Length: 299
Image (cartoon, rainbow, N blue to C red; front, top):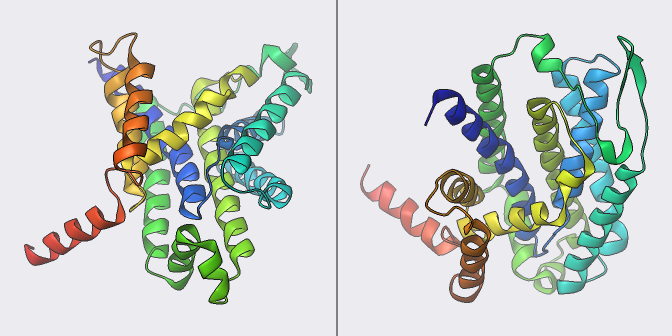
């Protein structure tokens, strides 16, 4: 594989890992969201507007996208969290589609060098050129993406053994039992969903600047389904689980010729098998505990 192609593949894996982690956080509190692609898209548009039209540096532009993703996900969670199970999952999918349709009708442009720049409905948003204008190489952008992903993983690893992390998992295992023990179930779910929206938006912002062009069609339901599938295949026992799912799909199924034309069939079949035989994925809580105990026994 040529070096440039390998760098592009690694960058895509890092970006989609952020989307997978957003779906993982929602699953962690006992809900399934098929709508994380909406916040991925909102983050892409918000950060693209900030860096292109407002001429913001990349860091603040990505931060704005994260805020938009977090706020919108929390606002949309208020009317939907009363639903449960499949009803909640379908509601997230419907809201994501409404956002995508809304973006298809949104026009907000400004002339730069005689050309209209900004969202142009179904035609998309072109010329998000911050990386090109600031001479950021593909390797440098990969380092940035991997660094941000590593920071997120370290933050989740720090959170896991804390009271907040344990409370989130307890809510995910049994909302009724968690409420009976005095845990603020709704606030914990809103926290997880808001954080998930921010992570999805961060991934979207990075994607927009890598691709330099985005359009509403990119943020279709299959992107959200894949995000959930990554977490379900990789496992819910650790934040590394969703990354395993992304690496398997993007790094193996999509990047190799062996599965050409069969990627969706293989991926969908694996999700079905895992739901039947390992509903919490490869790296579930029991497996992670056994691995951790083995590592401590054999330093």
